[in-house]
Image 1 (cartoon, rainbow, N blue to C red):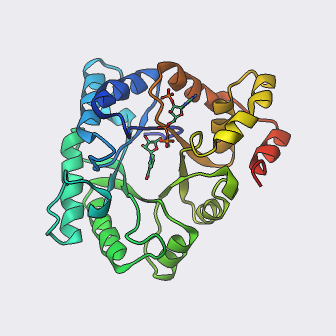
Image 2: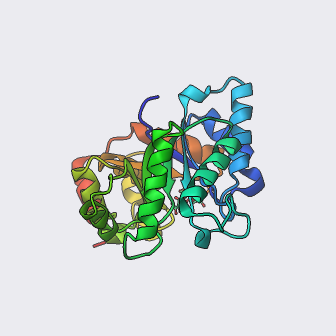
Length: 270
Ligand SMILES: NC(=O)c1ccc[n+]([C@@H]2O[C@H](COP(=O)([O-])OP(=O)(O)OC[C@H]3O[C@@H](n4cnc5c(N)ncnc54)[C@H](OP(=O)(O)O)[C@@H]3O)[C@@H](O)[C@H]2O)c1
């Protein structure tokens, strides 16, 4: 399948998950982000939405980029997709096996570590999990690997430990931190695709401040943010629950921002 251009996120949708995934596919999304973390995601519902779209002839499995995550027990509630008494290596295998069952597939395009064990360091726990994820990938159950909620320190420590670097980094992106400039720079230097989430919700004042520019360009502030994100090399994510916003967000792929607007947005919150 071609490289994804916009990720549709499935967090916090509970019993609307299946219907919204189907709606997103009908709207034109071809890349879906989920996680085997029942606390925030209903992955089996994602699978139901995919199955409905296949049945209706909207897409085939080959059209899709499916991404899921392994989440440590501390990020889960009591609905765990693995035996918490098992080793981390076994937990990773059980989690992905359960994801594949939820999603009705024998592989995902991307398997992501939801967050390192420590907010500061790349620890031995992460080393074990990452190795287990590599084994899943090598066995064909995932095509590419990613890490999420990482700092530049985490990535530099992975590099210093000579760990294989991820194909994807998925982070919350704050304009106030130069749109995660340090991490994005590391990604650019190492051919890692940066996936940005909370682009609207983490930057509400910026979204508001973009209204005049949006008006001039006959676009919405959300479209400006997503077009900006694409222009600086990011793979944007949206979890909108609105059919209109789905269309609006995808239409931003055709919007090119003037260079002076790019410069202004890049430094808007500094
Ligand atoms: N790795 C992680 O730890 C992590 C953490 C958080 C999220 N994620 C992923 O990222 C995905 C997206 O999450 P998010 O935090 O970016 O927030 P989001 O779920 O996309 O929420 C966006 C919010 O902005 C509103 N909105 C208004 N206009 C919009 C427009 N034109 N387009 C889109 N939204 C608009 C939406 O309302 P409407 O619904 O009414 O449009 C919604 O309330 C999640 O579903 C999940 O897959 C990952």
